[in-house]
Length: 183
Image (cartoon, rainbow, N blue to C red; front, side, top):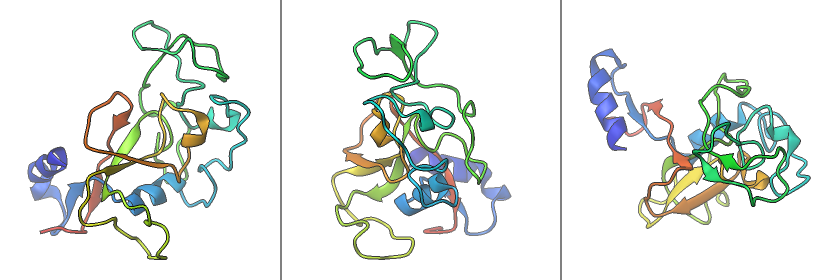
């Protein structure tokens, strides 16, 4: 959030009036991740054949089954079961190596979970809102999309998790440009 505020100030003279950079809401994130589809991923639904093995993810996402690194400086993945490809070291990969969705966005699924601006709410999807935002307060923030460290079933558009703000090698963020909440 602090980075988004800084970026808004840096680019203020080039932004349309009332626009700012921010973390996306869950609804914004999911719409971007789905790329106009209603399936588990923008490439279709998943058949999961092992804990770390869903071949349909391979062309679009880095996840526990294919996130192996050529060097040994990553996380020790030698004991991970059912991997799509054999690897002993895993980690993040440069953005843009997998196929983008129909909106031209890369790595919405896998590689790194992405923080959203919303507080976590159990009933986020139960009230039928259009473009909902989460609760106005809370103790946990939402992150979405799966990552290099995780099993196949978490790498899908509807995957949502929450935690108190922390840092980890599988968490990242994506910047959105929005007029929502602009000053």
